[in-house]
Amino acid sequence: MRIVFFILISIHSIILTAQVDYTFNSLYRTFEEGQSFYILKDGSTIHAAPFVTATKLASLRSGTPIRVEERMDELFKINGFRTNWYRIIFDNNGLWAEGYIWGGDIAVGAFYAKENPDVLFLYGIDEIRLVNRGDYTEESLQLCLYACRNGRVQDVLRFEAMGTLYTKTQGRAYGNRGVEMIQDVLEIAFSDGYCGGVAATVTVFWDGQQLHYINLLSNGFSSETFSNRFYIYPAEHKKQGQIIILKEEAGSFELNKKVVYTHQLEKQFIWEGKRLKALD
Image (cartoon, rainbow, N blue to C red; front, side, top):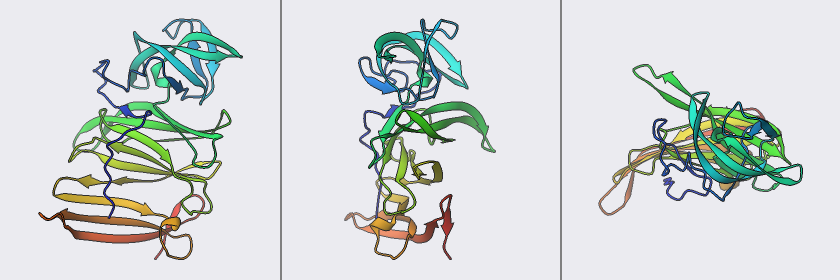
């Protein structure tokens, strides 16, 4: 049994706060002063003042390190995402320079490939838009995930984030987990951190050239029940071949903490280079 609790969030974690709420308690909109971060979007512009009409000082690549000096009061909205400008320090052709960048161009999550320190993965908000869910309409957060090697973008993947604007997130690379045709299994985890809230993971494969969206797996838990979906990879089981197992389980906890399963199911897949193929 595997029950996922996302409690500890790394330095790259974010708290997704409502668009109308601009408090200094929001880590999502307040990159900590004096700390280093990375440029998210390739070609992000550094300005001489916190305005898009201000003089352009430089254009930075994805993965370029910067240091945040100050969060500005000025706000700007792009693709439905309204957030602050920041005064930063950056390397401008070998010399330290100061400028201003819109907060949406700073990566909110960054992590390296498991075995290759030359590969850096970055993610952040690409767009916020209203979507029709049938019976209701809600804001949808679209994330962009960048794969950079030695300072150059190799691939970009866009996908929908889980949860609300308060949901925490964390990214991590796990190596290939025994899947021979890929280099890394990437997981972007989302958690509200309380019973009944969002607990989900987006799985992405990195083959060294391209990012491949695999699946969104949701989990649920309370003090009495649980429901989990997760992959078991070739390096983690004793079956022969390149089998990837999708395991589903649900159940409850008795008073003596004994686990009682009400549902258990396994589905087997193999990786074909572009997608998972289900085995009969």
